[in-house]
Amino acid sequence: MLSVPEARERILDGVFPLPAEVVALTDACGRVSAAPVISRLSNPPADVSSMDGYAVRAADLSAQGTRLTCIGSAPAGHPFAGQVGPGECVRIFTGAVVPTGADAILIQENAQAEGKSVTTTTTLASGTYIRRKGQDFAEGQDIIPAGRRLSARDIGLAAAANRPWLQVTRRPRVAIAATGDELLLPGSGLGTGQIANSNTPMLAALLRAAAAEPVMLPVLRDDMADLATLERMVDGVDMLLTAGGASVGSHDLVRRGLEQVGLKTDFWKIAMRPGRPLMYGHLGRLPFIGLPGNPVAAFVCSVVFVLPALRRMAGLAMPVMPPEHAVLGADVPENDRRMDHLRARLDHDGNGRLVATPFPVQDSAMLHVLAESAALVLRAPNAPPAKAGDPCEIIRIDRVLE
Image (cartoon, rainbow, N blue to C red):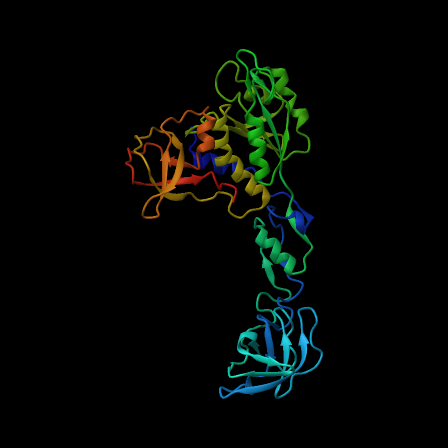
């Protein structure tokens, strides 16, 4: 059986960044920038006031008291057209352009105004309460690099740089096919031996959150002919996922069924719990990942293998997110030769440390436990027993898509 890192690396070696497309700024959040974003202007575009008050010449102010004549007003968006001379000031508001001749802002709390006369005993250094032109960024500056998943903060930055359209990597289109005679749509009347198909909607939701486009295919029956129809249903997609039928039972037919229509299997079975019967290969040029049928195993394998592949396809420079550090909230036994991924709650102790407490039952069909989990505690192959309070590594599944 392959190790988890080796299996993941072989999957990543077989997928590549997708081409770019141009989208409206309002549709770009969560997408990955395909080219650097270059500012079309400086921000601020001119020297502007950071406070409400009066634009003054700092040299005019004296601690013994100063009387200035207000010669006009400069609201934001309406610059004062004249020039501030000796003994003069201009009423100014936050964000307004500093008038020619002024070099500081006297805030209104430190000024007494009576008609056109403004008095103060405050002194100021040149530049006080002025945001200089280009203080945030300059025209022509590379403000967002290529290969970044764009956040709401990035959208605000691009908007301030006057960029209404952005180049982003095209969303990966991922076909999902669950397999099994026992599966019916959620909401169906279930007979004896039948269950609701949880894998397809769960995986589709995970893919959407990862900025991919899920293509949900019909449930495939445990029949070689049914599996062979997959080849005709995946035109135009960038990856194929199946869930179920990947083990060694007489009804686990995915590998044999797809090999009849051209699947080239790279590997099958990895040293991992849950998720040992994971398959990977290519159907023509199409990357294929065969997930286990147990829904918890399907989810964990998607976090460990599918999401890094999607990050690579999206053009992210670091497709594999490094694990985080925590301490155990309960004792755990020694591990066998498979890398374990224990579903766990997260809390903080009195010292502010992150505490990961594995659930006592780790069955790979228990979706309720998965839904209550915030992390996967990673246990290396053949790891010795560990005590509560010992350090551990975790994958945060409550924030796995950040």
